[in-house]
Length: 289
Image 1 (cartoon, rainbow, N blue to C red):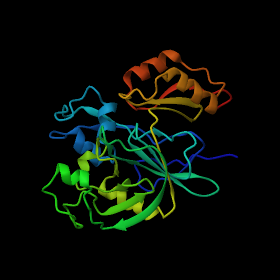
Image 2 (cartoon, rainbow, N blue to C red):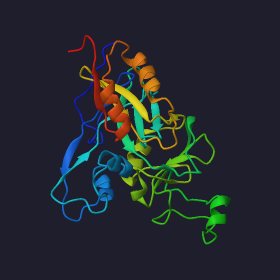
Image 3 (tube, rainbow, N blue to C red):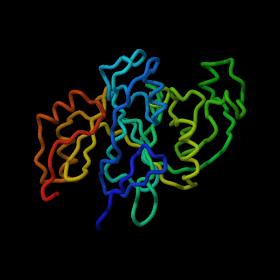
Image 4 (cartoon, rainbow, N blue to C red):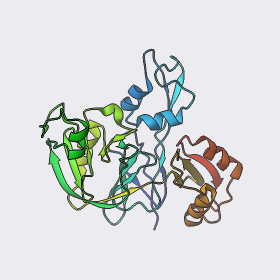
């Protein structure tokens, strides 16, 4: 089956891409830094996660970036291999992929997310959407009440509600996707296990999901993908050493995607050393234009 990549960018909220099992989508670009800018504000402005922007620009001071210099806005991403229809969440890159259900799957959008902090990690595995609530109230669990005894038993909808304006509950107990009243936590590990989205993103996502939709949560810091005859490697920080043998993982994915590709291992080692999360070419694919 021939699958066409539509010429749209991830920067457009309604962008749609036809996908194969692994595809590089979106485009990176550079943005001029203005006086007073901070990276956390630039991340929100461009609809990406704070950690994603930091990793892509490791030499730039996040709070006092040099004015009139350029910063890389990392909008390109590799769709995780064999991502199913529905929602795929990759904790390692802190992104959510929404893939349209149907005979020919299409990538609807990619959203930055915030995930569980250390000790309250977001669990991986297969889920389904089981509840959808607009303007939710929040009932702090006993563990939260123990840590924060000043909290009321129930926090009603409104600006003080940490769930924001929408709640998408998953089949994993106490885990869901929701908005936030603290948007600068997107692209960071700050939640108690739930997945947070920018307020504008959770509204768009809420309009596109339905009860019973599949939600796959993975933790994949290394991804291979392809575009226009090139094989790309995307490597994210892996402080928990989730992938012990990175080279073996790259070979495994290469054999699934493009077994004849002759990989530039010097480039691979540089990418693994830097782990900026920015997809970079590592091989030309055989028999490709």
